[in-house]
Length: 398
Image 1: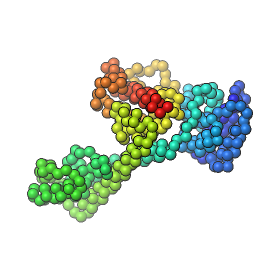
Image 2: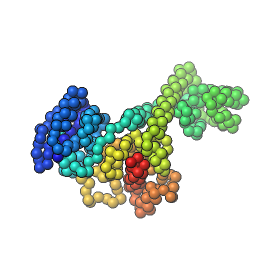
Image 3: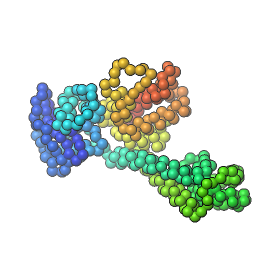
């Protein structure tokens, strides 16, 4: 029984080989993630007598080169949630990282959990790409918020509340929002108010047709009437029009990028075996489905639904005292913040729709009726959702 504990970092890893009862076969040694040193490690591990299991932490994508090299050579590899390693042996999160001690800790974990270790399944290219796209989607959303706030601030000075003229959602094909396209054509309130109603209707109708929006004469009249009310603080000069147009173009470019990423994520996630199962969960649409699959990955590498809860960072923090306020619920927040955000967005949908026959809502509503605070029953519902997710997806793909 040989336990190979590997503490992974960027471009290199610290490796130790141990056996039960504190026997050290190989003192900690460093391996760079290049072809030659990985091949040498593979040969060294394969020469070990008896059963051998390699354990390392799930750390971003840094573990993949060494995990894949060992797995492809037919060696048993288990990639473990770092939260489980953190809490193993001591209930304290490591404050100072010591690679050699960490490698020993991982090896000891492997020996203690020998029969519980789940074998590593390399993420296929589809899952890797999906996760990268989701991270990019998040980044572009941050850019979108800044650009949208910037354009609205500009319009406050030259076309107040232009962003509230239309309530239609973004267009699926290109992500465009109607109000953004509108201010590209009418960037200043005077570009509407200085026109007589009939001329504006004609221009507005032509604009709707050119941009594939439905025309409403009543809407045209409403916009024209509104344009006579507010007063702009910026004159209708070429410079003002230019800056509004450029800001709107930038915003449209980001909206188009987000739409393209969303469509690609949906295409990729629809090829994965759990797609239909995840889509069937209440509150999960196309975007949330892709985001859940991207962040959770292949659930077969998780040994229990508790691991999924820990991955989301909604598990209790370590060292939580037994003496705590039952009406408050702290969470570790040590998992994926993107997964956590998606979860609470889904819980918000469920809370809003109130589907009385859905188990997640029933659980949420019961906690709420017990007088639990909002945060407590939302976290509890997220727990319930993840347990259902794990059970149904495992049933569907195994």
